[in-house]
Structures are given as structure tokens and as C-alpha cells.
Image 1 (cartoon, rainbow, N blue to C red):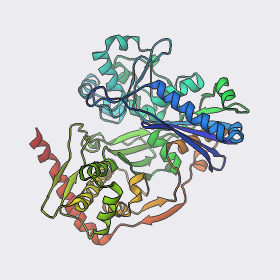
Image 2 (image 1 turned 90 degrees about the vertical axis):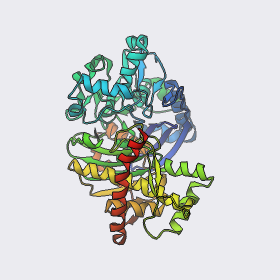
Image 3 (image 1 turned 135 degrees about the horizontal axis):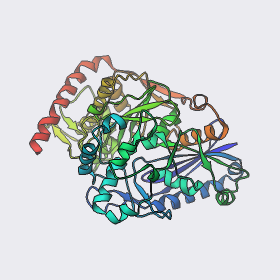
Image 4 (image 1 turned 60 degrees about the vertical axis):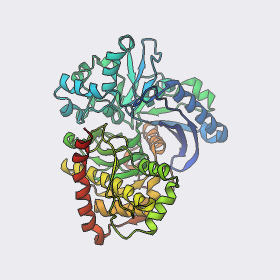
Length: 486
């Protein structure tokens, strides 16, 4: 038997096919475009997700016909928070407003004023990236479209509708809407009322490892599948990635050094810390929650420096590592796109401090890597404030290829960081695992195992005090720089 995982990302759709033992049989990707009609806006056409999905799965079916014929389960992962609006005839009303769209900043305050218990119920601060403030923006600026809105779907759940004909979401992705009572794992009537909506506008909810529907007959025929296919609830991208690397037990987590950065940890119960802008969400498996500290410019900060200096990002990181002897003089605040955790400030901006005649691209690269590391340390601090400890941490994402960056992280987080053997442990793989659970009734604990570990990076005790001192200087810079900008 085989299982398909599909990840609806921002830059593309990825599909992977695996067998019952979790071995990768094939994969295919298809690119997507993002449209920015105005500064701070970010949109995609929902129909492009479907076109890209068909292209990717068609390629898998053509390259692996025997394996596709044996398909039993399908799981979905996807970019979170996107607002896809459908009318009563199930037609898309406007381009989807994405997770990194900042237009609904004012509406966040309006929503919190309309429902003072919002943070208590949702476990999160209202942020422009979440779905609910976007609907307030549509109600205010596009009232005719708002009046015609019959269903609001997240990106992967719109794709699910086309795959199955069912309006369904699951707990992890729904947590990022600001309409979910995250502790109760159910829609909140109070939060829906705050945006002028009702339960009828929402899809029904299932757990990520549970069935959500069956694949349509015409798609079974198109892809040469022999029998029925169960479609799992799936997960938001980070929760699905956690399923892919086996981070489903309390205290297990990962640090993702990608374009943005995530410090993720699984919890046995709902543990919000809104004062620290921690994301407290349901996990993609039952009776489990998770927390995330999110930073908006992780490897993107090094890519920015690369463009500024005209030097390749990998080369910059390599030069920084070759010359590294300890914390540098320069300090970098990585708020190039604003920041979520711990500041919840979409208007925050980055800065270099401590520049001298000795500052050169390699020293600046070290400062950038340290600044991103300190942002992760901020995330760990506010997770700790919520009563959370991380017992086991894996590193994923492109930045984890830098040994220096991992050494910085291990030292500043004061814990070992495991690096898995090369492989795909992302959202699509986690989605395929969820598809297996839904199709076979399998226990997630037996399916979502950890990958083989290539190496473990230990904290460097000799650098701990120097980094603690520099982290203190880093933390002290945010408020005066923000005051100077205002």
C-alpha cells in the first residue's frame, strides 16, 4: 500500500509518495506565484493551487504508475492563515489573502476590542497574518464581497474541497484563524461574532489523523488508482512538519532555520503565553497541542546581506565560520519584515549596531547569524515563561547546513541540537504519515517516529558567558531603536 502527502506551500505545491514503512517512493513539485498589488499585501489565486497540485500528482502518477495504483491514503499540509472566500455556489470570490499579508493591522485591535476574551479563548494575540482580521478588512473595504461570502477556507482546505467535495478543516490549521477555541478544539461562537460570521461559514472540524472524506471517483480514474482513497484531516505546515520528524510527544521540538524561523515544541495541554507573542495551537494529532515562537527573517536575513554585499550567502557563512573565535563586536537585529515573537510588531525594523572600520562582510555575516540566534533565544525565553521546557530538539531548514549556526544555537539555547540524516521531513512527508493513520486507523505514535540522526551539536560551555552578555546587549537595543524611529 502507498500513501500520498501534498503540501500547499507559498512558493509551490509538493507531492510525495511513500510506502507503509515510510520509505520515499517519488516526489514532484510545481511552482506558484505570489502577487503583491500594494505594499504589504500578499495574495495568490486559489485556482493556481489546484493547477499546481494536478501538475505535481499527474507527474507522480506518470512516473510511478504501479505505486499510485496501490494508493490508500492521502494527507494534506499547507501554508496557514490564508483567507479563501467562496460564495453560495462554491465559487471563489477574490484572490486569497496570505499569511504574510499585513493589511489587517488596524483590524486586529478592532477584533480584540469587540471580544475582550479573544486572547483567553484563542490563546493568541490578534496579528495581521491570522485569518479573522482579514475578514474584518474585507467587511470594511470590500463589503459586497463580504456579503456574498458563504464559506471561508484555508488554502489546504480549499484544495480538500476540490479533492473530496467536503468542507472540512482540522485543528492545527484552524488554530491559526483566531476563530478556534484552542483549548476546547472547537469553533468559538464569540470569536466568529466578532467578525460578523457564524458557524455556517466554517468547515466542519476533524483531527489531523482522522478521515475527512474520500477522493473523488474522477481523480481516482485520472491517476490510475485501483481502489478508494481516504483523505486525512492533515495539518498546518509546521504541525505537519512535526509529524514528519516525529515531534509529537510533550517536550519534543524542532528549530527551523528557513526563510523565516520557528522554534516548535509539542505540549500535553493548552499553554498560551500571549504576553510573549507565543503561538499556542492544537497539534495535528488528538489530545496534543503545540507552541511556536516565530521569527520572520531567519535565513532571509543572510540572503538580504548577500544581496547587499554581492556575495553568495553560503560563502558569507563559510567565511564567518573560518574566522570565528567567539561573539563578535557587531550586533544585528533581524527585524527586516517586522517581528512576531516576542514583540508582535509588524512595523519593527532591523539594525546593525557597533560598526567600525574593521567591519567587513564576514563580520557582518557573523552578526546576522548571531542576531537570528538571539531571536530564537527570545523565543525560548517566552516559551519558558509559559511553563514549557524543550527536552529534545532537531534542526531543519536550509540554515541547518551551517555548522557555525548550529553551534551558536546549541550554545545560546543551552541544549544539544540533533541533525537528521539527509532526507525530506517536511510538511508533505508529515501529511503522508497522517494519510496512513487515517486510512489504516494506525496509532500516530507508532507511525511518527524520529529520523536517523547524523550528528548532535553540543553547547560550547566556554562561550556561554560571553554570549549571555551579548544577548543582554541585544535585548536592550529593541526599545531605544523603536523609540528613535517613532
